[in-house]
Image 1 (spheres, helix red, strand yellow):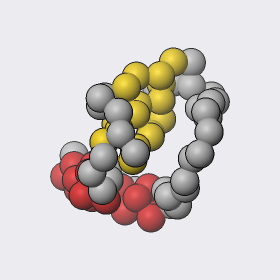
Image 2: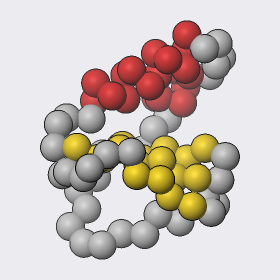
Image 3: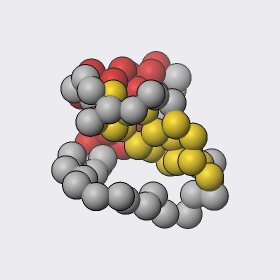
Length: 72
């Protein structure tokens, strides 16, 4: 479970959320998040993360959030 949340974007209708070291990292934008997800996966692969493809393939599918949602 994450102990804190860090917003990396100014807000928008789309968001990429990932958890690392007890923190939820959130990047929100009105742009399609797919290119950002591909760049994150590529950076993990280039950094030598052996399971980068599995991590990207195992990501949760996109969902539409219509009300206030907690990340816990």
